[in-house]
Image 1 (cartoon, helix red, strand yellow):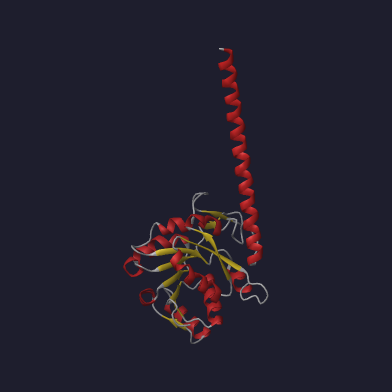
Image 2 (spheres, rainbow, N blue to C red):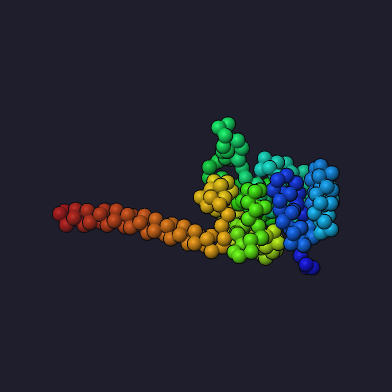
Length: 252
């Protein structure tokens, strides 16, 4: 797999471990790192020769692309702490801005119309680029829904830079999924928990490419019909105003 960008997974919680395991299955070489260096060494030993454990500074310095598998609340401080090393890097953001709601569920910890992807992108060091990816499925589905033999499941991503999409899509394939671009980073909210393209949103489950494309087509059609209806209402409104104006003009 020569010619690929050097890739590192930073943070080896549930999501980081699952993605590492998937990539190792495909034979892709990559770096793993965690503030707990023993955790990185143990995982690399378990996954085999394609996985290289490094300390955080070395991992960031050596990688071109990094998946920051860290909580949303840690993003800003992490990007500030390693700003000099992260300059010009491609940063993949799987974070979801949620916390327990005290009622057995979860709630957003940012505005309902805000997204982690757009917020995190505002903290980027100079020259760094952010891609929203690997966050549309929970850890269990990232493990169980990968590498389907008949029809691969989809991982959505969002990016403002088309020039890096090829590298992102290859990485998603290596992790056992079919990549599907949702648009620019302004679509990040759709890829996060409660969003329509998230497993814990309207989709409700992992989906294949054909299922995803059908869903997106129906969504686009619904929006188009809504747009037509809205504009028809506006047109009717202005027609009534025009007729009233003409009637008044004729009577005067």
